[in-house]
Image (cartoon, rainbow, N blue to C red; front, side, top):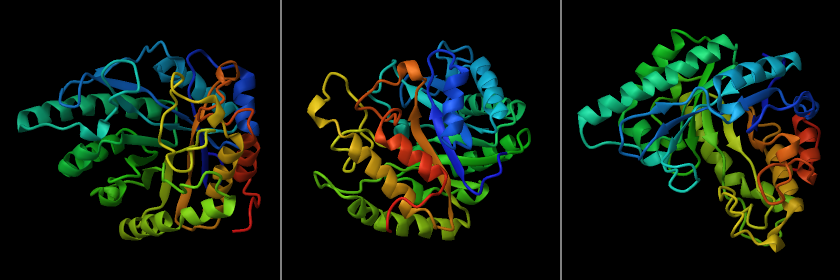
Length: 326
């Protein structure tokens, strides 16, 4: 693992193999860990079967791509976080309500749990083979997490039998992370940190820092109760005017108004994030959402910070340089 007090990770999303220059740019940003997301595919929230696609056409989701990228990251002093997701339905962003996955009969739950165990254990072994530093055992599976805690504890035990790195679960910021019943079986409290910070049209950095106050109090309470540090398993902002109020909203190239482009707000949001958590003792780090290879990075209103003012803010944040007067 890279020698860093915190994890400063970036999620890489690459349809085709990234170049050496792509990885060099991430390393120069101060990234300590590359985060990769393979998928299992489930037809609906109440279908108890999961399909693996280990030879995915999307490079960063395939086993071979993960193996190669892990080595490229290691060559540059970066570690790896492996973060498997379930994808529901067809290939679009509609209906991705993983939180609703659940069943009405014990037989269906048992079938799904067996399928999920096969899915996750494949990536536990891959994480072992590529010497990943962190494995995420589940992402935004709120109903399953709350209704089947014994399953998750047994799964975590099974994962630890083959993989010796750190484990976390990625719980949604809304109506999930505060009530996960198995945090103390993991190494980090993982939070998908799309917290709303301000409804103002042009919030200042100071206002955005204050917007974190109530969320920080709630996070601290969970950290104290579970006696585990908090890792933001996702945190990111689009460069649009609504990013402070609704940071979770996904880009829509058909609906996004070009006049809503707001790269300066994106930069202020990152500035507020790094400033507010710079000296929080129970905070373990951030997995930023997300980064594309240079040839796919021209996305003016998307989450990627490349070529925008936010990129320099992130560089200074990863270096833990002072960004604002907190």
